[in-house]
Image (cartoon, rainbow, N blue to C red):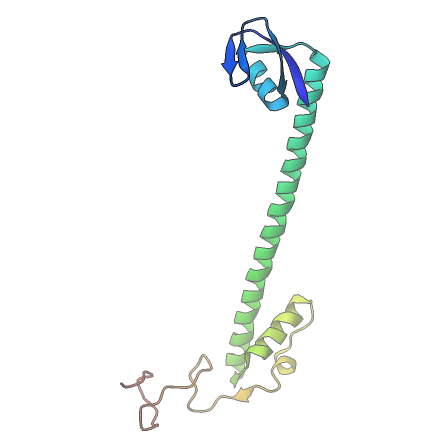
Length: 158
């Protein structure tokens, strides 16, 4: 869509040179910019107002879409954060219960929690292995030296 304008100032460009008082037909955005900067006036006020209303509507629609996209992205980020927290809870619960759990058991705990189910530790970690004396608090085994003897410092000797 184009808008008919009457120029108030001179203008020249790739399409020619124009003097004040000349009438030209320009794309909406360019026409609005000239009117807003007092370089032109619309020859048809209703046509100009219709163009402004159309741009306002488009801007509102774009703002709504952007807000929806932002809300979806924020929700997805919160869901990922919540899942990470449930993973931490699962590992801490296993540590408190004195068992070692697999990643699959952790994910089962997370899935039940995310679905609003009661993720009872006994139900989620039935295959969990009891910690033995070679396990550290975080569920990993203590490092051993080259002879297979447990290193009392918790670090491997090189």
